[in-house]
Each structure stands twice: as C-alpha cells, then as structure tokens.
Length: 469
Image 1 (cartoon, rainbow, N blue to C red):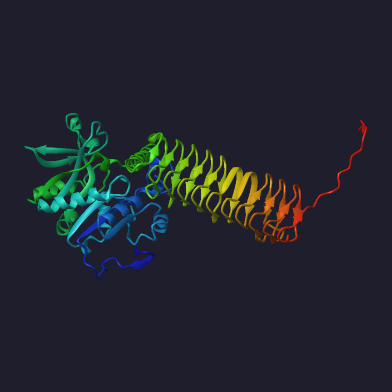
Image 2 (tube, rainbow, N blue to C red; image 1 turned 120 degrees about the vertical axis):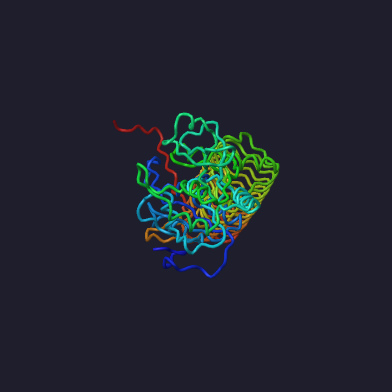
C-alpha cells in the first residue's frame, strides 16, 4: 500500500502534476548495527531525523516529487514524516536495493530520477542541484556519483577501463588489487526515468545473498550502449550512518559547520568543538557563546548577548544584551533586552520577561509574565503569574498555583510591589501596586494597593530553658 500524507494511493495511480525530477529515497533498512529499536533513518543528526534532513535538502533543491521507500518500522517513519508531504512506498521484504527502487512505482516515473539513501544525512541541496545539473549538461542516461576516500573500507569500488567507468565491485567481492582503488560508489544515481524502467527488470539476484543490487544497473547500461559517466561528489555525501559512532560523527560535523558559519557572521564562539547549535537557530553578531551550550529548535538570540557554559535553550526568543549565566535552562520563552538570568535559572514554557528583568540563581518561572525591571534574585518559584514593573520577589517565595483539586489558578502582582522572603502566595490572588508582603507570610486574600500584609505567629521566648533528656 502506498501512502500520500496518510492517504491511500493505488500502485499505478500517479499525480497529475508534472515534475522535472523525482527523488527516490531508500529508507527501508533495519539498521542492525545501530543496536536500537528506533528505525535507522529516524535517528537524529543535530536534532533532526536523518531522513528529514535529506527531504529538506531535496525541497531546497526544488525537487518536489519525493518517494520514500519504507520497510522496517514503516508505521513510525510515516508518523514522524506525516507533515513532509511525501509519498510512501513499502518494501514488504528486504530483497536488496534494486528491489527497494522497484517498490516505488517505477512505471509512473517521468523525466529524471535521483536515487538517494535515507541514511546519508550530510547531503546538501547544493550537492543535489549540482548532480542534476551535470547529468543534464553531459546529456547522460545514467550518472553515478562517486568520490575518493583515503580509507574506502566497505564501499563498492569504481573500476575503470581506459579511464571510463566499467563496473562497480562490492568490497566483499573485490580482489586484493581492486580493494586498493580509493574511488567509491556513494550510492547516489541520477538517471532518466525511461532508462530506469528499461534496465531495472533486467537486474538478477545471482549472488550469494540472493538480492537484487542496484549497482548492477551500471554494467547493464554499459552493455546496452547507454551513456554512463561518473559525477564527482564531496566525500561528505558518502557519509552513511550505520552505527551510533557514525551517528555521533555526523552530528559533530553539522554542529561544527553551523558554529563556523555563525563565526563568519560575527558571533564569538569560545570553542567551536564544544557548542551544539542547531541549524534552525539564529544568533546575532557580537554575542558570545561559551563551551557546553546547546541551542535548539526555533531559538533566536539577539546581538551582544552572553551565554555562559552549560546552558540549554530551546525554542526561545532572546533580545539584545541579555546575560544568561552558567547552567541555565530555558524552554519556549520570550526574554526581552538587557535581562539577566542565572546562574542555574530555569524558564519553563510560556514565560515572558520584559526588559531588564533579573532572574537569579535557582529561580524557576513557568507560564508567567514579569514586567520591566522586576527581579527575583534567588531561590523562588513563580508559576501562573502576572507581575508588574519594578517588583521585588524575595528569596524563598513560592507562587502556590496548584490546588488540592489539581486545578491551576493565577496570581497577579501590581507595579512596584515588594514581596518579602519566604512568602507563599496562594492563588487565585491579587496583590496591588505598591503593596508590601512581610517576610514569612502565607497570603490567601487579595491585598489592596499600597497595603502591608503580614501573617505571622507570635514569637514566644522562654528564658533559661533546659530540655528534658
């Protein structure tokens, strides 16, 4: 059964939109060496499933018809990619790469086709555009993307005759002399749809594994007098992920490339080998990023900010000249300019800080708005609150928002209010502007503007007291 964005599509049904290039992405493999129950192509590289990275590269290269061949973990792969607007084709049994391509309704293809592996996450849109451009400029029937590696390992070797492509020899079938060849098959093919339709049925499974290898299409094309040439590619495009070690190496490559690009744009990164900045993140020039920082998702950081070591920031908007001190953790929050956070501050989702707010060490804020120049210097919890400008939230203050009936209620604090240390504000509650709450108080009733509220037991002193032993 073939699926299009969660909808069934019969095997021979085609879309009525003509596309110049179709991408077939092979994503059916189990990935045994990953030692993980997660389908291999869903393992994240720098925060994004590797198959999603390849789809995005295709989109940027203006390849609109994307056919994903799924197999192991097909249901989960479809769920993760359901918003990517791609076609899914299922390879019921693993009979080799040619069989996988055959699963993608080859008879409905038109114009040109590019075949990609779903576990090569470092390929970029510029690579794809260049491959297709050279294929067309050379007027080829099949273009095979190759590269040279100092240690080719298990890659199939490119065998040439008088300089011309002759065959691909798999490493396990190669002689000692052939294994010395350092030009390898990347697994990327660009070919005419008609040629694929003609040659794919001719591929046999006459090998020890009894599988249908797509590499055989090269020798078949040469035998059938097709125009076949290699297309040079960066060795990066051959970087497949087959183990957790290779997955980590791929993420390292992406993070390092992103750090280098940001440095070119004026961001100061103390150690580019030890920051983890996803490609979706923006950082303004003049900002300083210390080691151990992880910037994730749709985060945007302004200019002249300071992010000290071991901070985690996800899906946040940070203004200019914000200081985020060591060990702070921020999620889905908005922080205006000139704020100071931490060390060890936590902003939970739906927090909004106006300009010049100070959130100190071991202060947690959740689903709250804090006005300009308000400060909570240390050891406080602020949840479901709306706090005005220039307020002081004392040490040990708790906004009690979770009631016995499991409901959440809101606390409102007016401008210039002073909340003393070790205060508990029990929602629903309103504290007026210029109000003062005495230290150690538990406040359960609204406090008017300008009032002092204190709830405190009388102090008892017994002199010359000796406890009984």
